[in-house]
Length: 236
Image (cartoon, rainbow, N blue to C red; front, side):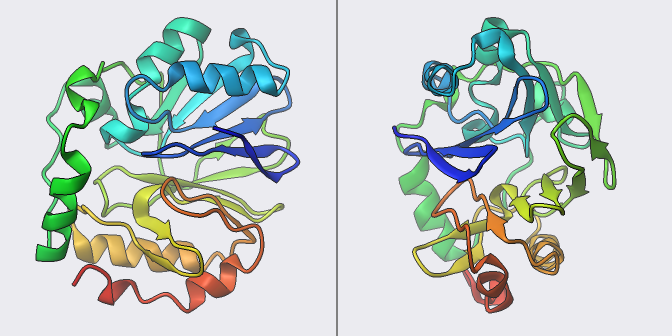
């Protein structure tokens, strides 16, 4: 898949399930999420396209524990030696020390869930330890500008988002999905009320660039898109 440049330092690698975002750091690169199992070769090819070697991947940030986000993390670590970062609450799930909590599905979500998970490669998932756990309000260094970590529970109990206030970039994880001209609450949440509250917290940041793992990225109009969203009505 062709890389999509969202800012001079952020690219989306669009994938059939769970887009991956690559970020040029002050030294090397980071990726936000890793796609389903088997995605590592595509990510390494994208790094090569950006002029980087495998060893230039320094950080893997996992927004949450679902297989379409952490699915290729173990393979990437083996190929690159990158450090793995994730929310503190989801870290034991990512490592396999704790089971994945079950989502509370509305009838509309249940129908979609059957379609999405039919034939999915989650059986090939390799668990791995998290090198650094992240909590709300932490800052990530080395990205060329401040990066704020936000604990945004609801999709999973330990889900995180990343906000870059200077450039207005927001990596929302699965709390926010998009279509061609709308934003909606991501489906398959462990706590719908928490997810809606976290959605509004992210919308209040009025981002300029929205980098959803599922859907269309927005490099303009993102704040208005979120301002007019109605997550309370989504999947009801």
